[in-house]
Amino acid sequence: MTSIAQISENEQMEITGTLRKFFTDYKVRGLLKACRAEKQQGHSAFEIFRYLLCLVFCDRSMYMQIMTGRYSEDFGKNTVYRFLNSVKTNWERLTCLLSARIINGSIRKLTGEDRQDVFIIDDSLFKRTGGKKTELCSRVFDHVSMKYKRGFRLLTLGWSDGNSFFPILGRLLGSSKAYNMVGVTKQFDQRSLAAKRRKQALSKATDVMLDMLKTAIKAGHSAKYVLFDTWFANPKDIIRIHEECGLNTIAMIKKSSKVFYEYEGERMNIKQIFRMCKKRRGRSKYLLSVKVNIYLVSAQQITFWDLGY
Image (cartoon, rainbow, N blue to C red; front, side, top):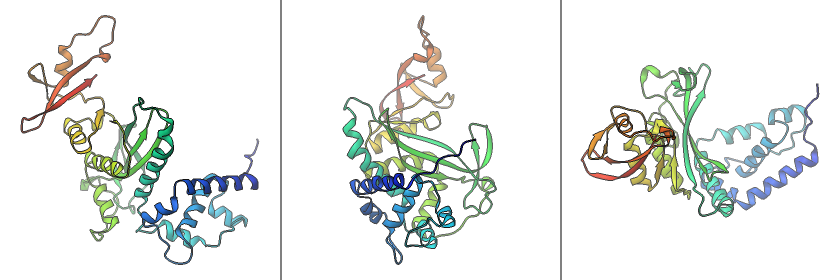
């Protein structure tokens, strides 16, 4: 059995130098101030943040550095915990602004104009064992195991050009139904960031998705399309994305008998539309694509959409 070699002192200095260049190139110190990551007393928030990011690429955690006598920072562990637990810091805004600077400042130079870049939205299970003392922890349906589990739905927004993927935003969603709630619920000042986050956690995923897109665009992100799976592919949400964000959508439409579209002058659901379209010889029916009209409740025509099945 071979042991994993630890990072040498020279390699650790090289990592620290690379991170310092990263902080300088993308002006991370200014971003921290814009996100209200400010010191309460003593050491600056930037130095604490730099140390924590360096830990990700080093061989030890802060606890192990203290235990082995390799901890050499001027601030103590309580200072680090106060920094991480600060309720004023808007970490979501930090990741959003930082990813925008990296994409617009470096990645777009390597990407041709003809390449299609997209926003990608998806949700996954953020599992929590127990969860009775975790705020807003809920029973969430896991589409992989097809069972309810305790935790949150992690809704993630990212950007991709086909080769690279950058996470932009991530939000935890609980259940708005009382019988699915497992964790405790606390009250906060409605003007505070904490109250806004908890209100979003109990909102519909489609509303949170739209708010995430608006937040990303406001921070400087841009893309040609929005890409997501069947769960989010409702005509109402596709129209809202087009009208409020100016983005077109790529998604597979749900097989539903309750949602209707206009095809060749008649109102039909997806099953009826594809039943009318004959399979082409030698080609799979999954290559079939038709154009339909989507209407609002007020019966005003919106636009044409390609429905691929």
